[in-house]
Image (cartoon, rainbow, N blue to C red):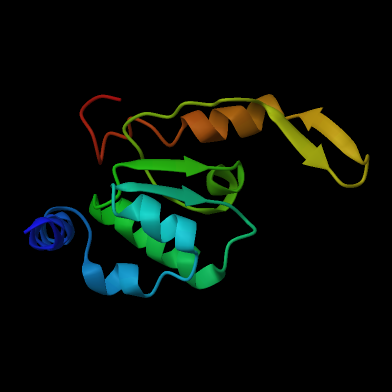
Length: 122
């Protein structure tokens, strides 16, 4: 009985949140677990295929929360309702130490939120 309940819960989760077909293509085991709960992450060290799936799921609304490094603000056009910046340090391999992000980079990140063509507020 418990196994059947778990199976039904698992099937319901896929129907109500994320396309099972897309999740099956994710290679990163931790990402796959997160996506089941409508949460994803995105960073430059990911396999390109996983990044594409995460971007697609976020764009379609299947992923509600996306944790990302600054790379998202620099090269990926993913509008959001809300942007929270946890820190403004980034590792600079040329200096072999961390440095502050420029104000333009921070503005670029905040600029992902509240776009008129996607949301009426943000």
